Amino acid sequence: MNFLKAEWRKLAIANYEVQPSLLDKYLPYNTELDLWEGKCYVSLVGFMFRNTRLLGIPIPFHHHFEEVNLRFYVRYCDNGDWKRGVVFIKEIVPKRALTFVANQIYKEHYQTMKMSHLWEQKMDHLLVEYAWKLEKNENKFKIKASLNSSEIPENSVSEFITEHYWGYTKVDSKSTFEYEVIHPRWQAYEVLQHDITVDFEAVYGNDFKMLSNQSPASVMLAEGSEIGVKSKRKI
Image 1 (tube, helix red, strand yellow):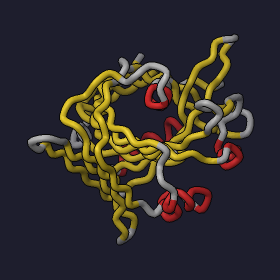
Image 2 (cartoon, rainbow, N blue to C red; image 1 turned 45 degrees about the horizontal axis):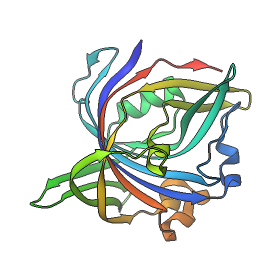
Image 3 (cartoon, helix red, strand yellow; image 1 turned 90 degrees about the horizontal axis):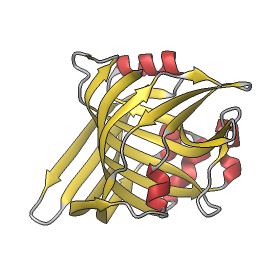
Image 4 (tube, rainbow, N blue to C red; image 1 turned 180 degrees about the horizontal axis):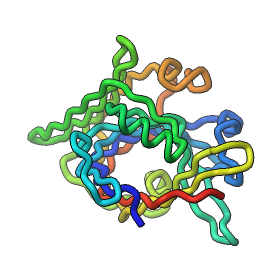
């Protein structure tokens, strides 16, 4: 059964290479880091939730909203079958009720901040921007991209980043929550320019302060799709 159904749209994704040891303390029990060609990535992701429904029911004033998260990539061996998933360092949303539900039910790491977004279609390009404010400091992630999307190439880093269909949350030293995220393969736009102005230390903590002065290894803009999130289980 889908606990949540929604659309995830215009996903701005910046991928940073980090030392694997940085993520040791965030790694959920029974999972291991999922590397791309021997490289370990964390991703800054901004996108829009649209047409959001919990247990099939639209929640008033919570249909459409922004989210920005910092995540990394893991895998879990389930009876010989490797599942590829993501772990969230922090997820930022503009509604306190969303933060409460996600943190209480899924043991995630949501935080409420004032947020905004901008989607503009120009004559020859798209502009997509996500902004979030911590105290008086505004953080922004802006992308200029081509007008038309195309299939994400197979065996590419973009495919690696987007083709993770499980979520894992560290409950404690001996247990993990697992949930499945269902969506089709996404298309992506060619990124022409990007601008990332984020105080990573203030927003995500001292472990990630170096990202403020580090250029991302890659930046992408995925169109997204309808998604479904299955109810969690403990592993």
